Image 1 (cartoon, rainbow, N blue to C red):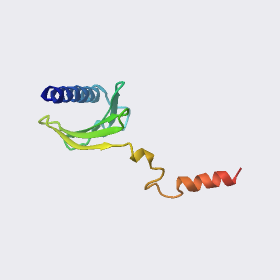
Image 2: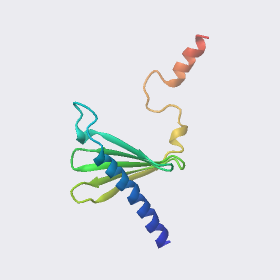
Image 3: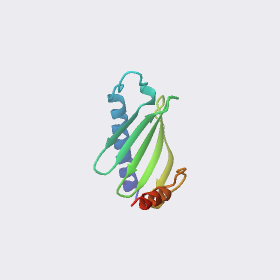
Image 4: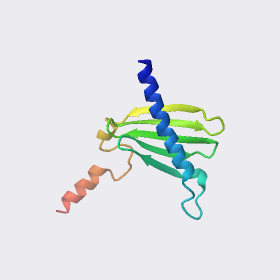
Length: 118
């Protein structure tokens, strides 16, 4: 069990290191874009890593596993390198919701309008 946990942590460290490396390797995207607020993305066949510099000395890294439909959010303290898991969520049921907090018109209202136009 200890070996499996170590392997998972090592794999996670490699993904995060890759995301941090990607973040450091990419320069500004154009005039007027502050490097501190840029978002970056890296992916493999299994995981998607999203990186965002929060501007307060922390970097937020979001790891998405599209196969298992799970995401995890980490904060990295740039000064110390400390890594902190902030949240993990299984998205399976979220993705089945058709309409939530989307404002008006709701998707079902738009669908009804389109069906009336036929």
